[in-house]
Image (cartoon, rainbow, N blue to C red; front, top):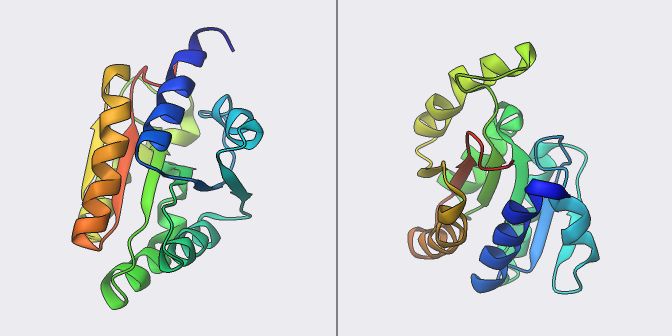
Length: 168
């Protein structure tokens, strides 16, 4: 895993310290080192989903069952699950905590990812979803813990965007 091992360890630590056992996820290349560690760790129950909307539904169902989940996706899928987020958040007050790779920021190397950077924060704001942008690895653990706490208190979604070199 090389340099990426540090962010993986910090995400795992944050999830465990926040007592987040269930991890629905849609694999992407930005967080590729995280998935096998989650799957292999007996603490976690991982659910690989076919699209982001399904991930929102699975995470919401886990919350309704009295457990904590963190949906792991890339921000590219945020537009795909906007309806599910709006429905569970506004209509039912069922929160979903999302951990997202923030693709498309200035400095992005992939042309296809740039438009995702243009729309991510605006979509979160339109859906009234509070979010944290994590730009330093030292912020990972506390951000995950704060997100789970805020979701429990507010009964609404929270997103963490891993930006810049955080996932490197």
